[in-house]
Length: 106
Image 1: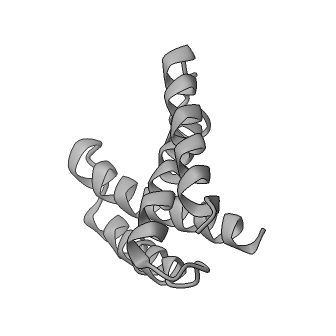
Image 2: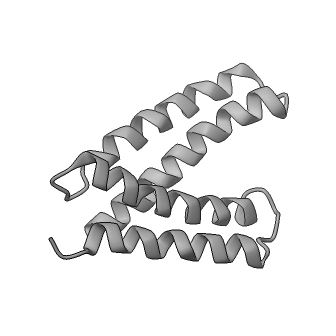
């Protein structure tokens, strides 16, 4: 359960950090918005080191599925675009893949 919270926190931190750059470059927000954005990206990288996995690549691959699902949620909650059935289906497929990678018997 801790791993799930770490992945969710890392995804949120990465999305916030990347969105700071998006807001600056695409939405005309002031450059100071990059300061909390960069801090958020540092938090993201640190959080991924907390994942219980013997291999970084496996943790990162699993994280990718979580990131995609969180991005669809961000699309809806932060940007105000309701995800369509293709967004939801794609996110579900990614979450299934992430579960197979992290929880598969080894």
